[in-house]
Image (cartoon, rainbow, N blue to C red):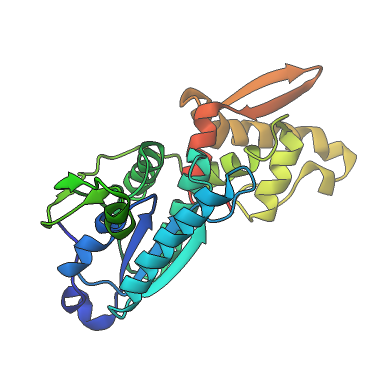
Length: 274
């Protein structure tokens, strides 16, 4: 298991980061730190949600506070983030955003996928594999049988430290410009026409889209638009459609590009969503 200790981390140039989506667990969140060190831990949990009963929110906040306190007692920085753990896309978006931020700082990232519910664990594992970071599962020895045990240990009890790494497999992702386009399309359920996509690519300073037809005199516009459509399709949209991430349809004389459900998942796990 490649959960690196601080002593292995290039003499302090890298930090060790753990991401822990947290449900009603304590042992499964804390047990790894009896052996492994960390500089920073992100705890993701539902601590604010108008749709949930106050008692459920209080219970979850208690688990977060307990885990926070024990991690901080080990000298670990803790960042707690409220996340809708029942929305797999939101989970993937938040986890991917953290991964991208920490990767920019050249840090080592580990994700605990065992201290949360099944739906959340699927989302965080997918995000980890897309971004090629470490994922691990903490085994339970048994389960709490009384209210007192649940409060102290959470649902699971971990007397012994047993961790199984979840080996990554390569998930093929589109290029960065395509991921950016998917993130924009995910915010437009009615789709975008080519001119709107052109403007986004120009704003992002994508090569080939520096000058748009609207910037030219009317004699050159038609030829320029035709060339940009060909470039857009060849570089990005044809490939995204083959992958099943977008669909295009004619609305009168306009081509409208819409994101598919599969494309939504790629957008949320891309790290480009805010």
